[in-house]
Image (cartoon, rainbow, N blue to C red; front, side, top):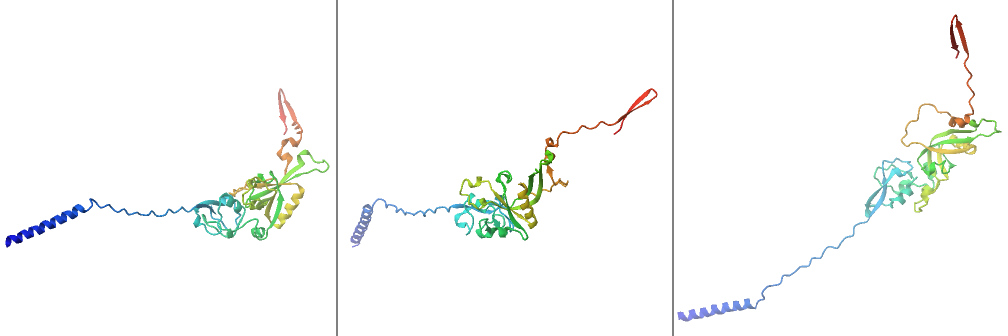
Length: 288
């Protein structure tokens, strides 16, 4: 009986082992690895950068803007404040000569509501200081300093006259010049300062009129001077270097500039002399 159970148990173990071996033989050699596809994040295009006009230094209210007052700053396009001036050189040309209506810190953007441009209505009335007037004079490439005068500059006015009344004057007294006004502020130059700068030839046009800020009495002097002769503008230094303390002549004649107009010099008369004889000695004395 025991032997029979042992045989049956052996057969069951053998059948189980054969079944397991058959299952292993029927299974494929290796399971393929599953590859997980990871989608790359979509590429984001970089934000375009623009050039924005900002203050180059602290600018006070009432400043007439010049190129030295402004500079360009490159920032992302989505960071440009509303109303800012962008576009590089065109924006700088548009701001040249504009009146600043508020104080602006360095590196702060200039906003359109911050300025009053020369072509805007009421520009002259806004730019004039209390008690002053605006008067325009005609200039050319010489009298207007070759077109290099800009709003905000300070100039002196020199009047040159050619005096001819019957030919009675000496040649050295026929042409005379004098400074009639000093440290006068320029508030406008033609209408060129209001151009956007898109015209390539605009920057080469020489101004024909310059508008000055003067007192009522100075306006009368300028009006009379325009009838008397030729007015030239002399640009003053922006550094404010003090002038020489020695008084300068109020009038400069042709003879003061050119010695050729003084005429021939009369010969200097000889000084009187006396010879003194004392015994055998002689002495000559000159009286001056």
